[in-house]
Length: 76
Length: 486
Image (cartoon, rainbow over all chains, first blue to last red):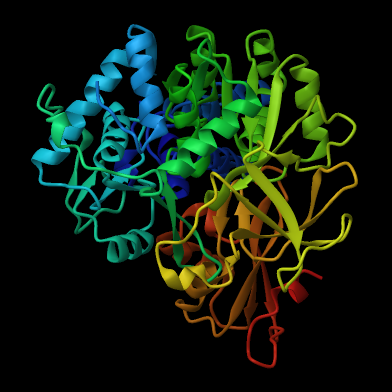
């Protein structure tokens, strides 16, 4: 699942998959701005058929936090 | 201390350095720069530029990154009469090539995502040669000399260089501060991009009144932005409507917790729905919520403060100061009566006199009135109202996108013909997004979308697609995009 989430983030931001490290946070690279962040959230929701609860959106600030939340929602 | 008769912006910063030398001017991460240090570093950067042989009238490319050296070089260039060409570090290669091809910069600073083939000097390699600037040989400059060239999106798809003089940028800061009321006690968080007129303008506004500017990467990490507001006791910030939608989506009404400390919020670059204006007024009952109407060529031409205009939230406001005039003209440049729609035109201390390329000046002015390309009218109360846009640019969350750019990219993939228009963002975030109409072809939409990711930034990729048998064109062959909107 982690690899799939990272692949989606890389594709949405149009960067190499190798650039998507666990510690990478929104705002760290020019492509990951607010528009990029929304695109990441909606693409993950659409492709993995999940919906992030409203109260966690504020905390999805890094690759790691997104992976963790996806794992939680998909009971991985 | 340096003397800069041509630049009111520099004179005001120098005065702060003399009068309040220990006041913090800039904050980034753990670094704090006082006004005395700022003035010193500007001189150091000027000495560095001069040591590199860069002189008055030369152009330098500055990549708009939230680095202290960006600020020092930007102001140092003004001191020496060097013209700043400020670019987005994420600018696509084609845009970068075009800009570099016409301005011929003598040096490039910062870096760019797509900088292949260009020799950028990273900001961390800029050495500030303190005490080395010979102030006796500063060039003689005029307020009417060009200070900055900002590139905006032209209707043809090619960027247009907007030549802002020292007087223009000083006028803009003075008009804006006069309306919003930013003062030396304020602390502003700047998360807007510095490559845009709005963000760079905020930097000048804050530093010319002796307030403190906290540089924040962007709004993507909203949690970090909220932490900055708390930790730095922020009293004001600027945002575009798309950012407001983002804040709402990710944090609901949580930002209201800062109502007691936020004295002002400036909003601009695109329209904001009435319900959002009402929500902001509810969340921030004592904050000046100032929405500007403006464009790179005319900075902030008009302002509307929501609480003051509570009964008239449809308006785009009234002229930003007594130095600004706004009128409505018909196609012949003749004045129309109040209430009658025409093209909104502006003139004043912050309005440009010309574009970088003379060919871009064509149809841009009626005498000294700058033509905004927006349609609207003046109400009986003296306020102005927008009714449409003459130019066909698509305003994606404040980023102006030319339909021609998208159409060219799509047709380069083998689609025989296409046309793009603005549609309301179905997600209600970005204001407008592109929709493409395509002549039938063997290529699938998914394939086109995938290929476009290589050619265009994500916000320029259409979100809706429609196959058509033909596109409406005038007898001369020009696409009639307005017909596609029906």
